[in-house]
Length: 211
Image (cartoon, rainbow, N blue to C red):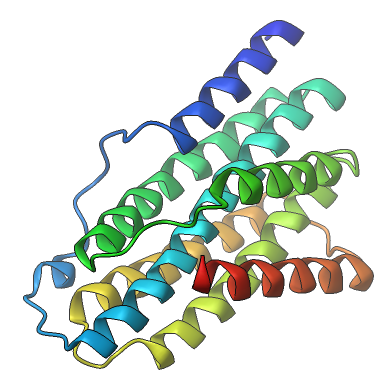
């Protein structure tokens, strides 16, 4: 793939993530259950699912940037394709959370383009560390997302079976992606990088919960 091709591929993925609503796999069967929520529960569930949608936007940005970096810096087409496949699977999460946010009568984050740009920058920086470190970044990201989803399963209203089914399926997929990255040769990222990722995640979740 040429330099121009790599850039256009990343641009196409960016536009799809931010502007398009591509078809996705059916939501988990449990997400089809009817849910009766009062206004308070609906508002809280909507805010939590908005945060989850932002997380999936960031996942698209990270994988897209890392795939671009794999091509530009390491000329590693296999790694780029591995990352793009993970992004395609995460695309289901993006669609599910966007749809659930709408069902709950709220909106996705007004700062979505900002979150995407920040995550894209982090992904591109991670790709400069080499293939193994880049994969290690994937593993650490998925671990932190898993912990984040665990906390949301505790916070979501018990009656919101639809949201809970989506989050549980997302959690299973994140664990699988981390395992696949480890099997592909991931190297543990340094502790300061983990702390930076946690701090960035805290800012994102706090702000996106409100706007």
